[in-house]
Length: 502
Image 1: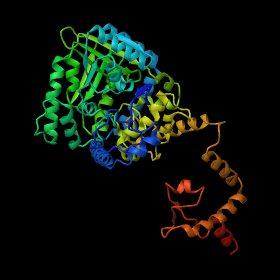
Image 2 (image 1 turned 90 degrees about the vertical axis):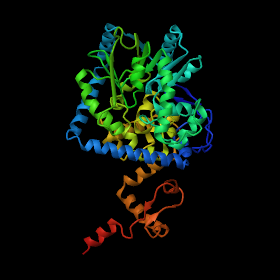
Image 3 (image 1 turned 120 degrees about the horizontal axis):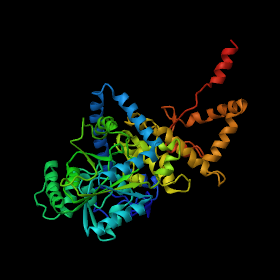
Image 4 (image 1 turned 90 degrees about the horizontal axis):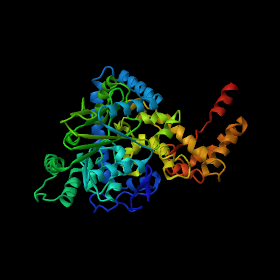
Protein backbone atom coordinates (compact mmCIF):
# COMPACT_ATOMS: atom_id res chain seq x y z
CA UNK A 1 0.00 0.00 0.00
CA UNK A 2 1.07 3.54 -0.69
CA UNK A 3 -0.05 6.63 1.15
CA UNK A 4 -1.81 9.64 -0.32
CA UNK A 5 -1.58 12.41 2.25
CA UNK A 6 -2.56 10.48 5.30
CA UNK A 7 -4.84 7.63 4.24
CA UNK A 8 -4.10 4.47 2.26
CA UNK A 9 -4.45 4.78 -1.49
CA UNK A 10 -4.32 1.46 -3.29
CA UNK A 11 -1.98 1.16 -6.25
CA UNK A 12 -1.27 -2.44 -7.14
CA UNK A 13 0.65 -2.98 -10.35
CA UNK A 14 3.97 -3.16 -8.54
CA UNK A 15 6.83 -2.93 -11.02
CA UNK A 16 4.94 -4.42 -13.96
CA UNK A 17 5.07 -2.18 -16.99
CA UNK A 18 1.58 -0.94 -17.78
CA UNK A 19 1.07 0.37 -21.30
CA UNK A 20 -1.85 2.56 -22.30
CA UNK A 21 -4.31 0.41 -24.19
CA UNK A 22 -3.74 -2.60 -21.93
CA UNK A 23 -6.70 -3.69 -19.79
CA UNK A 24 -6.80 -1.29 -16.87
CA UNK A 25 -6.13 -3.07 -13.57
CA UNK A 26 -8.68 -2.67 -10.81
CA UNK A 27 -6.15 -0.83 -8.64
CA UNK A 28 -4.08 0.78 -11.36
CA UNK A 29 -1.45 3.00 -9.90
CA UNK A 30 0.84 1.41 -7.36
CA UNK A 31 4.11 1.93 -9.14
CA UNK A 32 5.94 1.45 -5.84
CA UNK A 33 6.41 3.29 -2.59
CA UNK A 34 8.36 6.30 -3.80
CA UNK A 35 9.40 8.37 -6.79
CA UNK A 36 12.44 6.24 -7.79
CA UNK A 37 10.28 3.11 -8.09
CA UNK A 38 7.40 4.96 -9.71
CA UNK A 39 9.51 6.72 -12.32
CA UNK A 40 11.30 3.48 -13.21
CA UNK A 41 7.93 2.20 -14.44
CA UNK A 42 6.42 5.31 -16.01
CA UNK A 43 9.59 6.12 -17.96
CA UNK A 44 9.08 2.90 -19.88
CA UNK A 45 5.59 3.92 -20.99
CA UNK A 46 6.35 5.56 -24.32
CA UNK A 47 2.71 6.27 -25.20
CA UNK A 48 2.14 8.12 -21.92
CA UNK A 49 5.28 10.20 -22.45
CA UNK A 50 4.12 11.08 -25.96
CA UNK A 51 0.69 12.14 -24.65
CA UNK A 52 2.27 14.24 -21.91
CA UNK A 53 4.78 15.89 -24.21
CA UNK A 54 2.09 16.94 -26.67
CA UNK A 55 -0.29 18.23 -23.99
CA UNK A 56 2.23 20.17 -21.90
CA UNK A 57 3.73 21.79 -25.01
CA UNK A 58 0.29 22.92 -26.15
CA UNK A 59 -0.57 24.39 -22.75
CA UNK A 60 2.82 26.11 -22.46
CA UNK A 61 2.44 27.77 -25.85
CA UNK A 62 -1.08 28.99 -25.06
CA UNK A 63 0.05 30.32 -21.70
CA UNK A 64 2.98 32.17 -23.24
CA UNK A 65 0.65 33.88 -25.73
CA UNK A 66 -1.71 35.07 -23.02
CA UNK A 67 1.09 36.21 -20.72
CA UNK A 68 2.67 38.21 -23.55
CA UNK A 69 -0.57 40.21 -23.81
CA UNK A 70 -0.21 41.42 -20.23
CA UNK A 71 2.13 44.42 -19.82
CA UNK A 72 1.69 44.23 -16.03
CA UNK A 73 2.19 40.47 -15.67
CA UNK A 74 5.15 40.75 -13.30
CA UNK A 75 3.34 43.36 -11.22
CA UNK A 76 0.37 40.99 -10.93
CA UNK A 77 2.69 38.20 -9.79
CA UNK A 78 4.21 40.50 -7.15
CA UNK A 79 0.74 41.51 -5.96
CA UNK A 80 -0.42 37.89 -5.75
CA UNK A 81 2.67 36.91 -3.78
CA UNK A 82 2.10 39.77 -1.33
CA UNK A 83 -1.58 38.87 -0.89
CA UNK A 84 -0.82 35.22 -0.19
CA UNK A 85 1.99 36.10 2.22
CA UNK A 86 -0.43 38.36 4.10
CA UNK A 87 -2.92 35.48 4.21
CA UNK A 88 -0.35 33.17 5.81
CA UNK A 89 0.59 35.79 8.40
CA UNK A 90 -3.05 36.45 9.33
CA UNK A 91 -4.32 32.87 9.03
CA UNK A 92 -6.02 32.47 12.47
CA UNK A 93 -7.74 35.85 12.26
CA UNK A 94 -8.94 35.29 8.70
CA UNK A 95 -10.29 31.82 9.43
CA UNK A 96 -12.33 33.16 12.33
CA UNK A 97 -13.63 35.94 10.10
CA UNK A 98 -14.55 33.39 7.43
CA UNK A 99 -16.47 31.29 9.95
CA UNK A 100 -18.30 34.32 11.29
CA UNK A 101 -19.44 35.58 7.90
CA UNK A 102 -20.43 32.16 6.53
CA UNK A 103 -22.50 31.50 9.67
CA UNK A 104 -24.04 34.96 9.50
CA UNK A 105 -25.27 34.20 5.98
CA UNK A 106 -26.88 30.88 6.81
CA UNK A 107 -23.98 28.47 6.27
CA UNK A 108 -22.69 25.83 8.70
CA UNK A 109 -18.92 25.70 9.35
CA UNK A 110 -17.04 22.55 10.44
CA UNK A 111 -13.37 22.27 11.40
CA UNK A 112 -11.41 19.14 10.42
CA UNK A 113 -7.96 18.49 11.84
CA UNK A 114 -7.22 15.67 9.42
CA UNK A 115 -8.62 13.47 6.65
CA UNK A 116 -10.42 11.18 9.09
CA UNK A 117 -12.36 14.00 10.72
CA UNK A 118 -13.26 15.57 7.36
CA UNK A 119 -14.59 12.29 6.00
CA UNK A 120 -16.57 11.59 9.16
CA UNK A 121 -18.23 15.01 8.91
CA UNK A 122 -19.12 14.49 5.25
CA UNK A 123 -20.47 11.00 5.91
CA UNK A 124 -22.61 12.21 8.83
CA UNK A 125 -24.22 14.90 6.67
CA UNK A 126 -24.94 12.42 3.87
CA UNK A 127 -26.48 9.93 6.28
CA UNK A 128 -28.75 12.67 7.62
CA UNK A 129 -29.79 13.45 4.03
CA UNK A 130 -30.24 9.75 3.26
CA UNK A 131 -28.03 10.27 0.21
CA UNK A 132 -26.69 7.20 -1.56
CA UNK A 133 -24.91 9.19 -4.25
CA UNK A 134 -23.46 12.68 -4.60
CA UNK A 135 -22.12 14.76 -7.48
CA UNK A 136 -18.71 16.39 -7.25
CA UNK A 137 -16.90 19.36 -8.68
CA UNK A 138 -13.21 18.66 -9.34
CA UNK A 139 -11.55 19.02 -5.94
CA UNK A 140 -7.95 18.40 -4.90
CA UNK A 141 -8.91 18.54 -1.22
CA UNK A 142 -11.38 15.65 -1.51
CA UNK A 143 -8.77 13.62 -3.39
CA UNK A 144 -6.28 14.43 -0.66
CA UNK A 145 -8.52 12.93 2.02
CA UNK A 146 -9.58 9.98 -0.19
CA UNK A 147 -13.21 10.97 0.21
CA UNK A 148 -14.50 8.92 -2.74
CA UNK A 149 -12.99 5.72 -1.37
CA UNK A 150 -14.18 6.47 2.18
CA UNK A 151 -17.76 6.97 1.03
CA UNK A 152 -17.69 3.96 -1.31
CA UNK A 153 -16.77 1.71 1.62
CA UNK A 154 -19.97 2.96 3.30
CA UNK A 155 -22.26 2.46 0.33
CA UNK A 156 -22.27 6.00 -1.07
CA UNK A 157 -21.10 6.79 -4.61
CA UNK A 158 -19.41 10.12 -5.36
CA UNK A 159 -19.71 10.90 -9.09
CA UNK A 160 -17.05 13.11 -10.69
CA UNK A 161 -18.61 15.65 -13.07
CA UNK A 162 -15.47 17.27 -14.48
CA UNK A 163 -14.92 15.56 -17.84
CA UNK A 164 -11.29 14.64 -17.21
CA UNK A 165 -12.02 13.49 -13.66
CA UNK A 166 -14.92 11.42 -14.99
CA UNK A 167 -12.57 9.76 -17.50
CA UNK A 168 -10.14 8.96 -14.71
CA UNK A 169 -12.92 7.63 -12.46
CA UNK A 170 -14.50 5.45 -15.15
CA UNK A 171 -11.05 4.12 -16.08
CA UNK A 172 -10.36 3.17 -12.43
CA UNK A 173 -7.31 5.37 -12.79
CA UNK A 174 -5.90 8.30 -10.84
CA UNK A 175 -5.26 11.90 -11.97
CA UNK A 176 -1.77 12.71 -13.19
CA UNK A 177 -2.08 16.51 -13.40
CA UNK A 178 -3.57 19.16 -11.12
CA UNK A 179 -5.55 20.94 -13.87
CA UNK A 180 -5.79 18.28 -16.60
CA UNK A 181 -6.28 15.02 -14.67
CA UNK A 182 -6.45 12.83 -17.79
CA UNK A 183 -3.49 14.47 -19.52
CA UNK A 184 -1.84 11.05 -19.82
CA UNK A 185 -4.72 9.72 -21.96
CA UNK A 186 -5.37 10.24 -25.66
CA UNK A 187 -8.75 10.28 -27.39
CA UNK A 188 -8.57 6.66 -28.54
CA UNK A 189 -7.99 5.51 -24.97
CA UNK A 190 -10.87 7.68 -23.74
CA UNK A 191 -13.20 6.11 -26.30
CA UNK A 192 -12.25 2.64 -25.06
CA UNK A 193 -12.99 3.65 -21.47
CA UNK A 194 -16.42 5.04 -22.43
CA UNK A 195 -17.23 1.93 -24.46
CA UNK A 196 -16.38 -0.43 -21.61
CA UNK A 197 -17.69 1.55 -18.61
CA UNK A 198 -20.75 3.52 -19.74
CA UNK A 199 -24.22 2.16 -20.40
CA UNK A 200 -26.06 2.64 -23.72
CA UNK A 201 -22.97 3.74 -25.63
CA UNK A 202 -23.57 3.71 -29.41
CA UNK A 203 -21.50 1.09 -31.22
CA UNK A 204 -20.44 3.65 -33.80
CA UNK A 205 -18.94 6.02 -31.20
CA UNK A 206 -15.88 7.68 -32.71
CA UNK A 207 -12.82 9.15 -31.01
CA UNK A 208 -13.73 12.62 -32.24
CA UNK A 209 -13.54 15.01 -29.24
CA UNK A 210 -17.01 16.43 -29.92
CA UNK A 211 -18.61 12.97 -30.01
CA UNK A 212 -16.92 12.02 -26.76
CA UNK A 213 -17.88 15.30 -25.08
CA UNK A 214 -21.54 15.04 -26.16
CA UNK A 215 -21.77 11.48 -24.82
CA UNK A 216 -20.28 12.63 -21.52
CA UNK A 217 -22.73 15.54 -21.35
CA UNK A 218 -25.73 13.26 -21.78
CA UNK A 219 -24.32 10.93 -19.14
CA UNK A 220 -23.77 13.76 -16.66
CA UNK A 221 -27.02 15.62 -17.30
CA UNK A 222 -29.01 12.74 -15.80
CA UNK A 223 -26.85 12.89 -12.66
CA UNK A 224 -27.26 16.66 -12.29
CA UNK A 225 -31.05 16.43 -12.45
CA UNK A 226 -31.53 13.62 -9.94
CA UNK A 227 -28.81 14.10 -7.29
CA UNK A 228 -29.73 16.06 -4.16
CA UNK A 229 -26.27 16.67 -2.66
CA UNK A 230 -23.13 18.15 -4.25
CA UNK A 231 -19.56 18.35 -2.94
CA UNK A 232 -17.03 20.98 -4.02
CA UNK A 233 -13.77 22.58 -3.10
CA UNK A 234 -12.98 26.26 -3.65
CA UNK A 235 -10.30 28.16 -5.52
CA UNK A 236 -10.55 31.08 -3.13
CA UNK A 237 -12.40 31.84 0.09
CA UNK A 238 -12.90 35.51 0.92
CA UNK A 239 -13.21 36.07 4.69
CA UNK A 240 -14.26 39.72 4.26
CA UNK A 241 -17.66 38.58 2.97
CA UNK A 242 -17.74 34.82 3.69
CA UNK A 243 -17.67 34.13 -0.05
CA UNK A 244 -16.34 31.03 -1.85
CA UNK A 245 -15.46 30.74 -5.54
CA UNK A 246 -14.98 28.14 -8.26
CA UNK A 247 -13.08 28.78 -11.51
CA UNK A 248 -13.89 26.17 -14.17
CA UNK A 249 -14.22 25.65 -17.90
CA UNK A 250 -17.07 23.21 -18.51
CA UNK A 251 -20.14 24.40 -16.61
CA UNK A 252 -20.36 21.25 -14.52
CA UNK A 253 -19.37 23.31 -11.50
CA UNK A 254 -22.21 25.76 -12.09
CA UNK A 255 -24.65 22.81 -12.26
CA UNK A 256 -23.35 21.37 -8.99
CA UNK A 257 -23.52 24.74 -7.25
CA UNK A 258 -27.09 25.56 -8.25
CA UNK A 259 -29.20 22.40 -8.76
CA UNK A 260 -28.74 20.26 -5.60
CA UNK A 261 -30.56 20.96 -2.37
CA UNK A 262 -27.41 20.64 -0.22
CA UNK A 263 -23.84 21.79 -0.95
CA UNK A 264 -20.78 20.65 1.00
CA UNK A 265 -17.49 22.47 0.35
CA UNK A 266 -14.21 20.97 1.59
CA UNK A 267 -11.47 23.61 1.53
CA UNK A 268 -7.89 23.73 2.78
CA UNK A 269 -7.45 26.46 5.39
CA UNK A 270 -4.82 28.21 3.22
CA UNK A 271 -7.15 28.76 0.24
CA UNK A 272 -8.03 32.35 1.14
CA UNK A 273 -7.49 35.92 0.06
CA UNK A 274 -8.32 38.55 2.70
CA UNK A 275 -10.50 40.94 0.67
CA UNK A 276 -12.99 40.71 -2.19
CA UNK A 277 -10.92 43.05 -4.35
CA UNK A 278 -7.92 40.68 -4.02
CA UNK A 279 -9.76 38.12 -6.13
CA UNK A 280 -9.30 40.38 -9.18
CA UNK A 281 -5.55 39.71 -9.17
CA UNK A 282 -5.98 35.95 -9.16
CA UNK A 283 -8.80 36.06 -11.70
CA UNK A 284 -6.22 37.37 -14.17
CA UNK A 285 -3.38 35.06 -13.19
CA UNK A 286 -5.15 31.73 -12.72
CA UNK A 287 -6.79 31.10 -16.13
CA UNK A 288 -3.77 32.28 -18.08
CA UNK A 289 -1.42 30.11 -16.05
CA UNK A 290 -3.64 27.03 -15.91
CA UNK A 291 -5.16 26.68 -19.39
CA UNK A 292 -3.87 29.62 -21.43
CA UNK A 293 -7.26 31.36 -21.37
CA UNK A 294 -7.86 35.06 -20.75
CA UNK A 295 -10.62 34.17 -18.34
CA UNK A 296 -12.49 31.10 -17.18
CA UNK A 297 -15.69 30.36 -19.09
CA UNK A 298 -17.41 29.83 -15.72
CA UNK A 299 -16.50 31.72 -12.56
CA UNK A 300 -18.98 31.11 -9.75
CA UNK A 301 -19.14 32.71 -6.31
CA UNK A 302 -21.54 31.98 -3.48
CA UNK A 303 -22.07 33.43 -0.04
CA UNK A 304 -24.03 31.38 2.45
CA UNK A 305 -27.62 30.48 1.61
CA UNK A 306 -30.10 32.51 -0.45
CA UNK A 307 -33.75 31.54 0.12
CA UNK A 308 -35.30 30.13 -3.04
CA UNK A 309 -32.07 30.29 -5.03
CA UNK A 310 -29.58 27.42 -5.22
CA UNK A 311 -28.80 24.97 -2.41
CA UNK A 312 -30.83 25.63 0.72
CA UNK A 313 -28.25 24.07 3.02
CA UNK A 314 -24.54 24.89 2.85
CA UNK A 315 -21.74 23.24 4.82
CA UNK A 316 -18.14 24.51 4.78
CA UNK A 317 -15.47 22.09 6.05
CA UNK A 318 -12.20 23.87 6.84
CA UNK A 319 -9.44 21.29 6.40
CA UNK A 320 -6.06 21.38 8.14
CA UNK A 321 -4.52 17.95 7.38
CA UNK A 322 -0.89 19.01 7.83
CA UNK A 323 -1.22 22.66 6.84
CA UNK A 324 -0.60 24.04 10.32
CA UNK A 325 2.68 22.15 10.62
CA UNK A 326 3.67 23.39 7.15
CA UNK A 327 2.84 26.95 8.17
CA UNK A 328 5.28 26.61 11.08
CA UNK A 329 8.25 26.30 8.68
CA UNK A 330 9.31 29.87 7.73
CA UNK A 331 10.74 28.65 4.41
CA UNK A 332 8.51 25.71 3.52
CA UNK A 333 5.26 27.58 4.28
CA UNK A 334 5.50 29.40 0.96
CA UNK A 335 4.26 26.18 -0.68
CA UNK A 336 0.84 26.97 0.83
CA UNK A 337 0.61 29.99 -1.50
CA UNK A 338 -0.10 27.60 -4.40
CA UNK A 339 -3.28 28.37 -6.38
CA UNK A 340 -3.28 24.94 -8.13
CA UNK A 341 -2.74 26.26 -11.66
CA UNK A 342 -0.29 23.52 -12.69
CA UNK A 343 2.03 25.96 -14.51
CA UNK A 344 5.08 24.51 -12.76
CA UNK A 345 4.20 21.03 -14.02
CA UNK A 346 3.84 22.19 -17.62
CA UNK A 347 7.43 23.47 -17.73
CA UNK A 348 9.10 20.77 -15.62
CA UNK A 349 11.32 18.40 -17.65
CA UNK A 350 11.13 15.75 -14.92
CA UNK A 351 7.32 15.75 -14.83
CA UNK A 352 7.07 15.74 -18.62
CA UNK A 353 9.14 12.55 -18.80
CA UNK A 354 7.85 10.67 -15.77
CA UNK A 355 4.22 11.77 -15.62
CA UNK A 356 2.18 12.47 -12.51
CA UNK A 357 1.69 8.86 -11.41
CA UNK A 358 5.40 8.47 -10.65
CA UNK A 359 5.07 10.91 -7.73
CA UNK A 360 2.57 8.63 -5.96
CA UNK A 361 0.90 11.77 -4.65
CA UNK A 362 -2.32 13.73 -5.17
CA UNK A 363 -0.06 16.71 -5.90
CA UNK A 364 2.50 15.72 -8.55
CA UNK A 365 5.18 17.78 -10.26
CA UNK A 366 7.31 20.51 -8.66
CA UNK A 367 4.57 21.76 -6.35
CA UNK A 368 3.91 18.20 -5.18
CA UNK A 369 7.62 17.75 -4.51
CA UNK A 370 7.51 20.56 -1.93
CA UNK A 371 3.91 20.30 -0.68
CA UNK A 372 3.35 16.57 -0.21
CA UNK A 373 6.37 15.89 2.08
CA UNK A 374 5.35 18.78 4.31
CA UNK A 375 1.67 17.86 4.55
CA UNK A 376 2.66 14.27 5.26
CA UNK A 377 5.49 15.32 7.60
CA UNK A 378 7.66 12.93 5.61
CA UNK A 379 10.95 14.78 5.96
CA UNK A 380 12.64 11.77 7.50
CA UNK A 381 15.13 10.10 5.16
CA UNK A 382 13.45 6.72 5.73
CA UNK A 383 10.00 7.87 4.57
CA UNK A 384 9.06 6.78 1.01
CA UNK A 385 7.93 10.31 0.09
CA UNK A 386 11.21 11.85 1.24
CA UNK A 387 12.47 11.23 -2.31
CA UNK A 388 10.13 13.87 -3.75
CA UNK A 389 12.27 16.99 -3.12
CA UNK A 390 15.05 15.23 -5.04
CA UNK A 391 12.79 14.65 -8.07
CA UNK A 392 14.01 17.83 -9.73
CA UNK A 393 16.86 19.05 -11.88
CA UNK A 394 16.74 22.44 -10.08
CA UNK A 395 16.61 24.15 -13.49
CA UNK A 396 14.41 26.88 -11.99
CA UNK A 397 11.73 26.84 -14.70
CA UNK A 398 9.01 26.09 -12.13
CA UNK A 399 9.84 29.19 -10.09
CA UNK A 400 9.82 31.37 -13.20
CA UNK A 401 6.42 30.02 -14.29
CA UNK A 402 4.68 30.24 -10.90
CA UNK A 403 2.08 33.05 -11.02
CA UNK A 404 2.42 33.71 -7.29
CA UNK A 405 6.24 33.62 -7.38
CA UNK A 406 6.69 30.63 -5.07
CA UNK A 407 10.43 29.97 -4.81
CA UNK A 408 10.02 26.28 -5.62
CA UNK A 409 13.75 25.65 -6.29
CA UNK A 410 14.68 27.28 -2.99
CA UNK A 411 12.15 25.22 -1.05
CA UNK A 412 13.37 22.04 -2.78
CA UNK A 413 16.90 22.75 -1.56
CA UNK A 414 15.58 23.61 1.91
CA UNK A 415 13.67 20.32 2.17
CA UNK A 416 16.61 18.34 0.79
CA UNK A 417 18.73 19.80 3.58
CA UNK A 418 16.17 18.84 6.24
CA UNK A 419 15.90 15.29 4.89
CA UNK A 420 19.67 14.91 4.68
CA UNK A 421 20.15 16.21 8.22
CA UNK A 422 17.53 13.76 9.50
CA UNK A 423 19.87 10.95 8.54
CA UNK A 424 22.79 12.22 10.62
CA UNK A 425 24.06 9.63 13.04
CA UNK A 426 22.96 6.68 10.93
CA UNK A 427 25.08 4.48 8.68
CA UNK A 428 26.89 6.78 6.18
CA UNK A 429 25.64 6.51 2.62
CA UNK A 430 27.84 6.46 -0.46
CA UNK A 431 27.24 10.18 -0.88
CA UNK A 432 28.30 10.84 2.71
CA UNK A 433 31.56 9.00 2.16
CA UNK A 434 32.19 10.72 -1.19
CA UNK A 435 31.51 14.20 0.20
CA UNK A 436 33.75 13.58 3.21
CA UNK A 437 36.57 12.43 0.93
CA UNK A 438 36.14 15.39 -1.43
CA UNK A 439 36.20 17.83 1.49
CA UNK A 440 39.64 16.53 2.46
CA UNK A 441 40.87 17.10 -1.09
CA UNK A 442 39.32 20.53 -1.56
CA UNK A 443 40.48 21.89 1.80
CA UNK A 444 44.15 21.56 0.83
CA UNK A 445 45.65 23.33 -2.18
CA UNK A 446 48.54 20.88 -2.35
CA UNK A 447 46.29 17.81 -2.26
CA UNK A 448 43.95 19.43 -4.77
CA UNK A 449 46.82 20.03 -7.17
CA UNK A 450 47.98 16.43 -6.87
CA UNK A 451 44.49 15.09 -7.50
CA UNK A 452 44.09 17.27 -10.60
CA UNK A 453 47.30 15.86 -12.03
CA UNK A 454 46.13 12.34 -11.24
CA UNK A 455 42.88 13.09 -13.05
CA UNK A 456 44.77 13.29 -16.36
CA UNK A 457 44.95 9.50 -16.28
CA UNK A 458 41.26 9.45 -17.24
CA UNK A 459 41.79 11.26 -20.56
CA UNK A 460 42.41 8.04 -22.54
CA UNK A 461 38.94 6.68 -21.69
CA UNK A 462 37.18 9.78 -23.04
CA UNK A 463 35.50 9.56 -26.43
CA UNK A 464 36.12 11.71 -29.48
CA UNK A 465 33.73 14.28 -28.05
CA UNK A 466 36.03 14.51 -25.01
CA UNK A 467 33.37 13.21 -22.65
CA UNK A 468 33.68 10.30 -20.23
CA UNK A 469 30.53 8.18 -20.30
CA UNK A 470 31.75 5.04 -18.57
CA UNK A 471 34.22 5.71 -15.79
CA UNK A 472 35.50 2.93 -13.47
CA UNK A 473 34.05 2.45 -9.98
CA UNK A 474 33.37 4.46 -7.85
CA UNK A 475 32.90 7.17 -10.53
CA UNK A 476 30.64 4.80 -12.45
CA UNK A 477 27.82 5.74 -10.08
CA UNK A 478 27.94 9.20 -11.62
CA UNK A 479 28.69 8.41 -15.25
CA UNK A 480 25.90 5.86 -15.39
CA UNK A 481 23.53 8.82 -15.70
CA UNK A 482 25.72 11.76 -16.70
CA UNK A 483 28.69 12.47 -18.95
CA UNK A 484 31.82 14.01 -17.45
CA UNK A 485 34.08 16.32 -19.47
CA UNK A 486 37.53 14.83 -20.04
CA UNK A 487 40.31 16.35 -17.90
CA UNK A 488 42.23 19.01 -19.87
CA UNK A 489 45.58 18.12 -21.39
CA UNK A 490 47.07 21.06 -19.50
CA UNK A 491 45.70 22.14 -16.14
CA UNK A 492 45.35 25.78 -15.15
CA UNK A 493 48.05 25.32 -12.54
CA UNK A 494 50.50 24.01 -15.12
CA UNK A 495 49.63 26.84 -17.53
CA UNK A 496 50.05 29.45 -14.79
CA UNK A 497 53.39 27.99 -13.77
CA UNK A 498 54.65 28.09 -17.37
CA UNK A 499 53.47 31.65 -17.92
CA UNK A 500 55.08 32.76 -14.67
CA UNK A 501 58.50 31.50 -15.81
CA UNK A 502 58.43 33.52 -19.05
